[in-house]
Length: 138
Image (cartoon, rainbow, N blue to C red; front, side):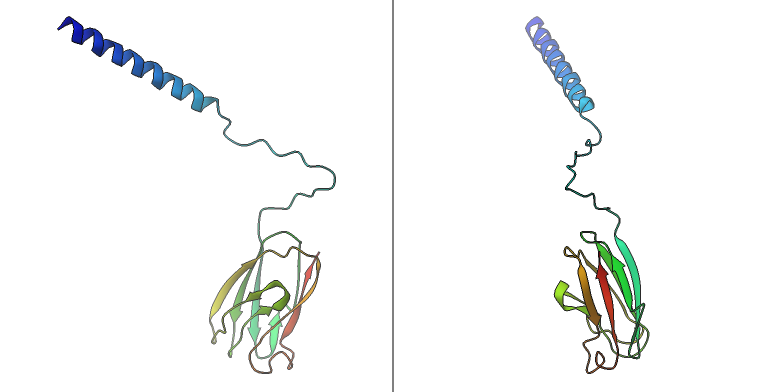
């Protein structure tokens, strides 16, 4: 019986030491990572997405000009206020489904290259009738 008691006590002590060591190692880890040091040639891009609501209707987009920052996520909520429309930016591979009146779709993308890009409705001849706008990536 004395042999079992000594073995049991030793197991409890080993378990306690392991538990204490494990807790100390975990509590010594930093809760957040230190910010990276950037060289002068690198830029910091904000993590908050640039969000816009675009309304599409009878041959118009409102707004018809959007300015965004290169390398930062863009979220566009496209609201179709009447008719059958979509929202397309060919060069950035951005496209909603063709939506019926009062339907909405949210699209997300990250433009990497500065420039001026046309967005438009690809339904029928809507683009030729003026349903287009400009995305400016700075």
